[in-house]
Image (tube, rainbow over the protein chains, first blue to last red):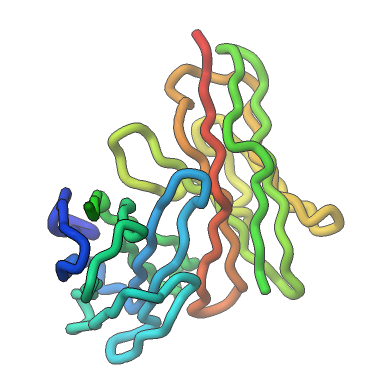
Length: 113
Length: 110
């Protein structure tokens, strides 16, 4: 099992460009999440999907959109990137019936110039 | 609202010394508390959770509902313990969002 995979690992964008971060999990988890990690701010929830077909805003959703494509895949889109979105992005999944442990992907390091 | 406070951004200890990473939470209800760890160049992973009441890599954490704390402790620090540690909180039962603290970087000095 690969667990949670993310692509790309690194990305550099110019202000105003758009991109989609991809996430997939092979653990048959219902719930999936997108976080951003910033120095001194810890992990902040951007969006989450409690189950296939549902998505909800987290703590810092502005400037982002998400799609729960199917049970395995949950993508994060930046429509018009801004320097404030420079961060490390983590996708995670969990099985609430299994104690709600979050399983994380390796992260995507995004720089917006 | 649920909140997790980790008062120390950086904690430096000498190898062999005791370690205590502090975590306080704010939540009205029955919480589930977790400690996650991120070693250098590795992904974030669960270290332990309060409901399992187990010791992982020599670390333990006790939930103190009176003080709303979930401090992480280890009697003798090892160099390989150097990492970023996050305390996290969720409501118990079924699907619930998880709230993370800002993290504490533990640096074990040889």
